[in-house]
Length: 234
Ligand code: NDP
Image 1: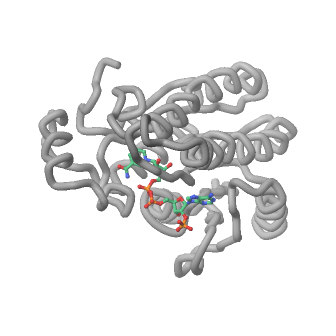
Image 2: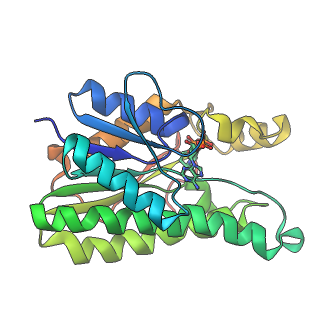
Image 3: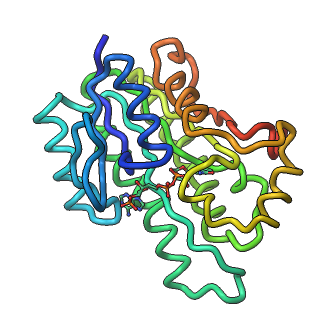
């Protein structure tokens, strides 16, 4: 059955891979894009997750085009890495505002239509390094692990209405976000990864696709790691 899907930050990286995977399944997929142009062949809406009006307008456009959102993939995220002693408030806030509060905003908007429909899937992009801890990423790790509390509390709030809320926690995946890592850091991270290689966006999309599927109907409040084993057991 074709569902109305919205993927934030869907113009590149993991979001784009997820959007393409769900579109290939026959879903009606809208991608939120903050800058540039929407990707070819996908319906795009401007969506800056730090701006409440932009989020509200994006959902209105998606609903008009393809119906109320039934699957939300809250993917938009940033890093602003630096050691904590050098991190100013603005750098900390920027990451929390995008990764945590931006997700809160999109999820809150999506949840109201899902409650009314008594069905829905919400998948949040967390991070394996968040749980493991990562030097230079206190802001990022805090934002990504905070999503666990958000998701699990929301799982309680929405569960009785058939809406599931889950997290995917990628390890090191080949996107623009990880291109900036130094060779030294990458080598160290690969030593911590039993599979010994970075993942691909399609490998993350496969996990999101599963959690968004009907087959995952009895899974909520879960964290699905997609990291080649990095941080397993945490
Ligand atoms: P990219 O940097 O490649 O893409 C990030 C996406 O988020 C872009 O589409 C970007 O839009 C969008 N975005 C950033 N800020 C905002 C904002 N304020 N409003 C709307 N959209 C925004 O990252 P990835 O694809 O690698 O990561 C996607 C998600 O997965 C992120 O949440 C990230 O934290 C998470 N993740 C990634 C991992 C990895 O190894 N790649 C590992 C673990 C988690 P624009 O093009 O305008 O900048």
